[in-house]
Every structure is written in C-alpha cells, then in structure tokens.
Image (cartoon, rainbow, N blue to C red; front, side, top):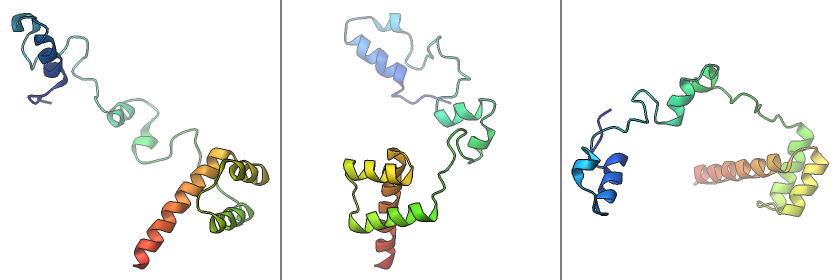
Length: 127
C-alpha cells in the first residue's frame, strides 16, 4: 500500500518540524516506522480474518458467544403493546418490562431501537 502525501508519519513529522528539529533527523515523509511491521493488517476486519477461529465471522456469520435472542410470542405481544403506547421507553418502564418478560434491560432497549427503525422504514415505504 503506497502512502499518500498526508500519512500519519508525514503529519507527525510535520508537527515535529514546527518545534525546530531538522528534517534530516526526521527522515523522509514516506518512511515507515520500524515498530510497525508492513504485513500487519491496518483495519479491524482484516485483523479478524487473520485470527484463527473467526472464519464464520468473516463470512458474515454471527459473533461467537452472542446468540440472537428469540423472543416468545407472549414477549413480543407485550413489547408491541408497550411500543404502541409509547415509542420511546423510560428507565422505569424498561426495568418493569425486563422483570416481567425475563429479559435484560439492554435487550429491551435494543428491541425498541430496532422496532423504531422498522416503524421508520414502514412509514417511508408507505409514502
């Protein structure tokens, strides 16, 4: 990968040159730092693809250890009823629903966020 004129190294060197250090001490702007090997992936996805055991994740599978929550019909009915009453849920109502439906508060919060997005898509498609 060729570095553009505004690489991190170039920016770091240009800020140091303002402090009075000579450019000869700093090296060329396209020089790679010795502490970072050239073969290290720079983005997270590339790094995860190179880690053994993450093949399913790289192929679009679910993240291991975080299975998708399957809500029961009774849970969905209560969540939908609550959503019809109020699209945004308060902390007290979130605690009450979590206790009543045997779910975590973060599951309730996430369900409401997803349901608002579904509602938004439905109303936009209707126009």
